[in-house]
Image (tube, rainbow, N blue to C red):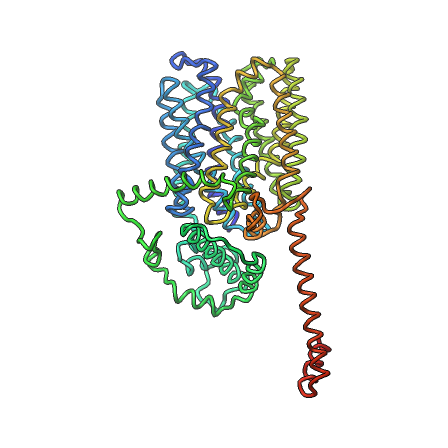
Length: 589
């Protein structure tokens, strides 16, 4: 059930990959269309506009998630993937192509925010990594499919138009997601629809909706109560922030421990109370909006409400980078990872692979398109490998070792390009893509789905993903010119960036393998009085502050137990009747 949901939701990833693959092949044939008048600069603009559109699309996706929920947001992104290819297919000049690519980019950015968040909220902690990587796997499948379709259309008249139009067909399927996908239980809890959230959890965890609350499993009940507890906590923090930023001076760990104890003791009676208190016949009847205002209805009201939400997402995104913000640390880590993800030229290498092979001495354009598809196959293989390792080896080791092999691959590619060896160039690009896809490609989306609380997830994911696509757009705009001007030296520079990426992952990225979303987010929380906005001191993944807190808690517990024991002994000495009972209690324990 979860795999089907993840695969269908990740159609946005498939279309993203399809766009990456198709432009690589279509660009060769666009050069021969005299009406387009493509130059090196205009080719870079056509390629880079998709990433530029994705920068804005991330904020649109964040607003769609907040305003309409996860599944409607995913279905809505299909409209961009439908309109963009139609615009490109009928274009007769570079500006028309660029505009169509920009529209497609809006869909790429929106789906890149919505899909990982949705899948991450649906999955269990022990399988979350593998399921979120499904997005990247579908992206690779799209790349492979588009490369093969481009090759099959090589002899068709006006072939590049058919190449760019092809993604419109899977986009129609993506629009059906609103009828196929269940809503995220976490979003349903935020909306107050607890009964519906419980039914969705049953369908995910047990394979079918439970008609009677008496048949609920303890795990489903506990998961629902954890969601409710986390959402209420975030809602309370939001209210305190709106009232002027009240400082929490209590013992953070004590509160968390109390929450965990309460959650663990959740009973079937609690579930029955939830079902009785929150009827689900009218999905919005029990769902007041901000400030108790009912959800807007009608096209104009809905549009106005969405624009307000979009403005709120943009405003909150700007606040996230303040050092005093509670999400500052995870946002900073996500932003740096996003930069390194695209600064390694991972997507530019795919976009310009046929041109690089032609420049390295491969004579036939058809051969260049066909052999460039091997890079997509390597990407698919790498992501498939990461699905089986991300929840076993962990996120952090994959990032570190992936950076090492990406750097080695880029240094080899530099030598191959400098000596104009087409076979060596292809081999180096394949090695790079295999290394990158087995590590950074999927792990980034896994971390992005885990790091942020529900209160800030829409804005935080939009900000990080916007940085990802902004970096990718900039690289796409200059990649071809830099490769032609610097030759192999350009890839030495990229190799050094990969080295820095590995060093950063070693020093700053925490391990999240096997942890619940609540545990992951708690590890990033800013502690009161920390001053610097950091969650604690760490080295090599060891958190000294966390160790200190746990040690102090254990010591205090020991002292308290010793005092109780002494009190019991004194009671035995002083009182005969009560002393017997007290002594028996301690002897039994």
